[in-house]
Length: 326
Image 1 (cartoon, rainbow, N blue to C red):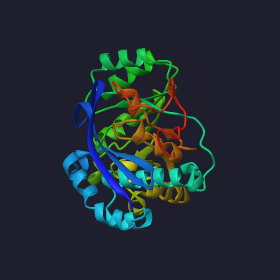
Image 2: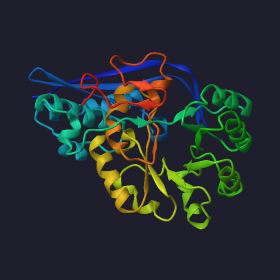
Image 3: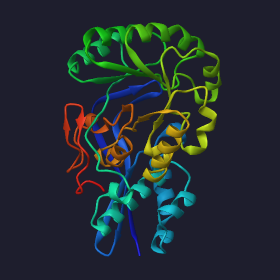
Image 4: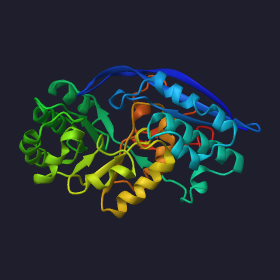
């Protein structure tokens, strides 16, 4: 019998995190704890308003599983019990953690995966004026990969400022659905000249058919357009990579399956995150192995992370300890 505990938690950020849709100063998360026979597993979901999620709705969705969990709901049945999203993610990852603790092994062994290696994560520069983003780039110029949040107007100036102040960093940019097709076509050649390696979700998911009709001068990655395997077919011919986030896939189980099918269809892989703690990032480290781009810098934005948390050396991230997850 599995006992369920679900909690809303807030973690202040080091500063204001801004994207094209708005700003935040706090990470609001939902932590799920599953206990059985003295063993305990944990998972974290990050509610995201873009997908009509709130902390209340996520908690309610998790609570709906209290009786099924007590009656033996497993990860396979969970995939049908809840739709993809942060609620299923928190429960799925907690089940992985619990199963690993019960089996006295690590989660990657349960998944049939090799022991994970360190990965290098992007560090995100929050949307701001070109001058402010240039200064943020200067302060983080030693990081190997910088991700710029963009919005449309003044974006080329933002990228120029960052490139000038962090000349040795590789750059990727994320418009969070904030551009038009005309802006993509106008910006992409200049971004390529500035050394931008990838553009993430330039157009609204509802408008991304336009990407099939333009020359993708810089590779384009689907984020809001990609959730789980069911969304892959519609992305072909429009995107070059997909961004796998556990809060979109509904957990590690689907994320690993999505990675496999995306590779088989010829997509490159990015592994990303919402703004959450190390508990959110830890399962994603397994998915991030071998990915072209990794963006798991949520803990670097925390004023205070969980303890124990993931261990970073600059932007280099070690796999999670068993005490944290898995």
